[in-house]
Length: 176
Image 1 (cartoon, rainbow, N blue to C red):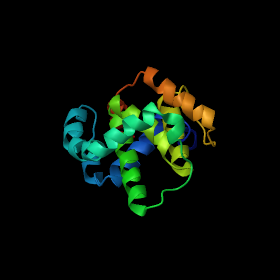
Image 2 (tube, helix red, strand yellow; image 1 turned 60 degrees about the horizontal axis):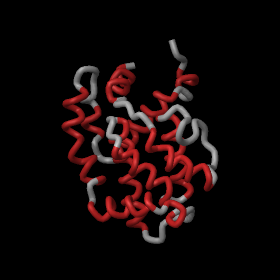
Image 3 (cartoon, rainbow, N blue to C red; image 1 turned 180 degrees about the vertical axis):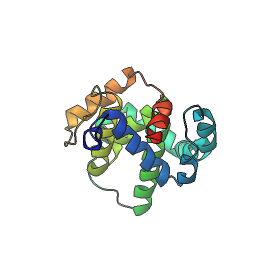
């Protein structure tokens, strides 16, 4: 048996917390009750439209490719100037977290671009999420301020990450 205080530091529990929060913040909390072992594909189909409507925004996809092609020039640390940019970035990050945990490799590229383009507070969240997702190969498994060189290295290394669909693991944890 895993004690709750110990579970808080096990990567799958951390990923479960990120997933649950992201689904709620995307307005899909009601669908979360459908996620059960053996029902993952139905759940995926029900939430897919909302998740990808945020990520498939064409101007963002073009900007993402520009950011990834010139990471040093696009690296930022300061907060967004306009509140609407902050809100869009927040929802994009939540959607990318859900899609990545559902095994969507393309959205790892979104997380890499977000790691470059987002302000420091969001860099911390992305770094911690990626660290637990990749078992420390990309990102950090503890909360610490990332350096410029770490970020640029992780953006490069993310292409080699073998992504696993974690939805069935999350469904089993939800039952606990």
